[in-house]
Length: 100
Image 1 (cartoon, rainbow, N blue to C red):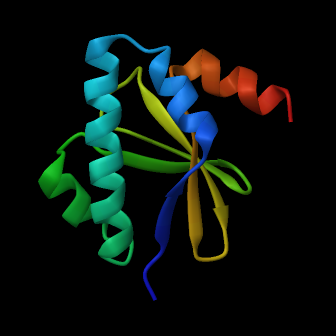
Image 2 (image 1 turned 180 degrees about the vertical axis):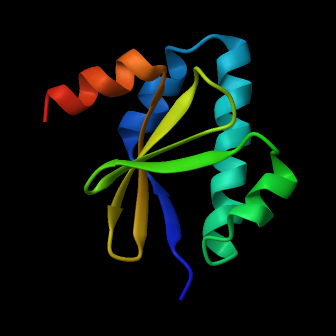
């Protein structure tokens, strides 16, 4: 069963604070994530859409995804649900995780 991608309101709030170029990158990351999850987590399928796509576990149950070095999306995995929580740079993700 493929994983499903959901969005928390906090993701939309974090996107509003980004610059226009970062917003475009986040849109590409979310598109690649959808491809990744719908393909049964086949990284090669996501890389066909976005060659620089990466997806890695930070600490349970949090993962991060991106297509370039600076802008990332933080994902909370709960069973088959993958919830996009935050978009931002490395420091913003680190700060968020420090607060939980």
